[in-house]
Image 1: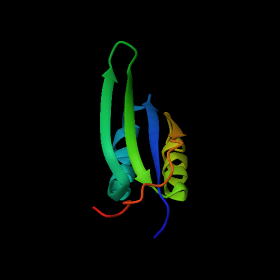
Image 2: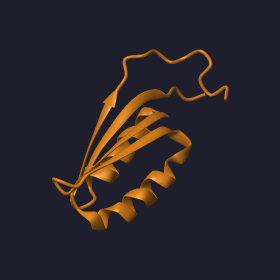
Image 3: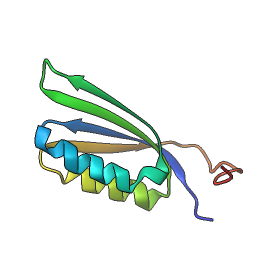
Length: 91
């Protein structure tokens, strides 16, 4: 079984037209997503999205890279320092 990491993907969306392609990308990685929180910050005209993942490192970096390539979207992944859980994948 492939080792997974817990990570937070922080996303700032400045371009409203990027929301649909962003949601399509997130749907492709749905098996790894533990939770999602989105906050529209209307005063500044941006949306801030937090995605929590438990995924292989290459999947996390791939998603972060693809999201960051969308026009008007910035993404940054923060990885936990937790060791692999002994029951990983048991769900």
